[in-house]
Structures are given as C-alpha cells and as structure tokens.
Image (cartoon, rainbow, N blue to C red; front, side):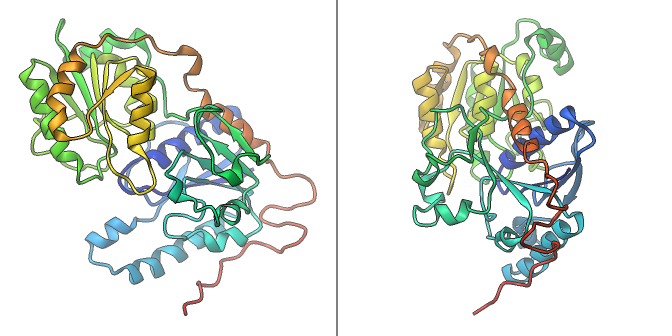
Length: 375
C-alpha cells in the first residue's frame, strides 16, 4: 500500500512528530508499504532508519520572510502539493489536526478518490465550528483520536461516529531510566549536579525567548544547570543561553532520563512526553489559535504531576515549587502504544479487490485539481 502522510506545522512540531511516529510504526509492522512524507515544516532531516522518503515544500512563514506575497505563495505552493499527491497516487492519505489544511489547501483533494485518515488532537471548539464539522470530516474513512478514551470531549458530530477510534497518546519515543547515568556522562552533567531540561516548543514561537530567558535566570540563581532544548526550528543559539546550555536535540524524549527537573510549554507532545518521564515539571502555556494549551496545563495540574505558571511574574515562585517536587514513577503501561495502535488502524484500510490504486468504482484515476475558482 502507498501511504502519504501530510504534516504541516508553523510554530511547533506536533503534526510532524505524530505522523513520523505513526509512519515508523507502519514500517515496523511491514516495511513493504511505501511511505511518502509530505510536509511544509522546516524541521529535518530525520535521522531514524525507519523514516520515510520526504518531500518538503517551504511553508508560508518562510515565504513571508523571503518577501513573497500570500498570493504568490499560495499560487506556487498549493499546485506543488497537489501535483505531489497526484504523482505518488497514494492508496491512503493521512492528515493531522486540520481536516482541510490550515489554509484549506487540501480542500480540492477531498474530492479525490483516495482513502483518507485523520489524526485528531484535542483543539479549541472554535477549530471545528458545529455547522461545518460534518462536512469537514465527511471525506475521511477513519478518524484516530490521539488520546485515551474519555480524556477529551469530541465535537458533537463525532461523539457517536463509528469512524472514530482512540489510539492513546502518540509520541516519538519513550525515555529509558536504565540509561540515566550514561546519558548524564555524555552531557557532561557532574555527579550530584542538578540539571533541568527547558523545552518551550519547536523553536518557531517569538513568545518563547523571553520566557526562556526568565526561566534560565531563575534556575541558574538556584544552582541548577540549564539545558535549553530549542527545537529544530530555531537555527541559532538564543541570546540568553550559553553554548553549554544549548541543547538543540530532536526528538527529545530519549534524553529526558538524564535530567532532574523539567520546564515545558503546554503543547501536546511536550506535555505527553514529560508526563511519561516522571520528572518534577513546571508547565507554562502559550496562547494558540486552535491548541488550548491552558486547558492542557490545567489538566496536568489536576492530575498532580506538574505545577504551572501562567505569566512571567509567576515563574520565580513556580521554580521554587518545582525544586520541592519529588520525582514520580512513570506509567509504564501507557508508554508508546499510541503510534502502534494508529498504525494498526491505518493498515486496516488496505485496499480491497474492486478499487485500483487512486481509483474507485464511481470515479476515475486521480489527477491534479483545477485551481480554486476565484470570485
């Protein structure tokens, strides 16, 4: 089966991380499946042996920095996207978070006779207006919710939909406590030294530097070594961080056992990975259009494994609270199962006898769409 994964990210890495994890899980099950990763995220290259072939179309933020107008970007990038899908002619297309893409660039493809699967991550209710939810999800054969059943409230139109299946959290890896001393040696963390990992997203957020600056100052003042995981979207060392403190590693989860404390944002991947690591954790939410980080942080506080800071002014007291927290045991039973479950669900859509690749009984072969009609 030919599977196309479409990951588009702006400020973070959530879509890319989830879809890469699922793609790797598909390859572990059966490496004969052809996988194409189509992304507009600037992160990469990907280093895992099981990573798929990747085509990257630069995103709108890169175009904006280069001086392209939105009109020039859309009329250039969107046809490239459509032609890539048409050329690969997938049996299955997997989309994350935005059913039609953040710029509705996938809307023409929704009419194409390709099986489609959607990865649902809990979002603000405004992301799926009640009147549009049924039509947005109508083209999808499968909707995979990247949460445990009962932990999120789905839009009403999906709450009793037979296409909906819960996979549990989908992450890019799991920490291994057995590696702690070796990891600390490789990172140059001295015996008895307290070290904190600070991870505030993928590196594309302009709001993160002042938060990182304040957190780093407060940790240093308390004798804690700082490791700033700025993410692959950040190309340079932050002004407030030294070379020794800069830790531009992705994925981050395999390194988490080396640390004693964690400070993170409220993003899906950050919260999921830190919850599994068992580290005393401070979470600081950022405002997003669709991702409700404040709600996610509040849920972590209610569960008792983290404390929160909702503003720069709250950070000093929150750091003091962080230092008084105890390390928590990891929930071994919930580790790393989401990607494997999602892969199992996707492979259940393997094409049957009547339909040919990219074709159904009602429709002809896949071809590039006509440009959207402009009024």
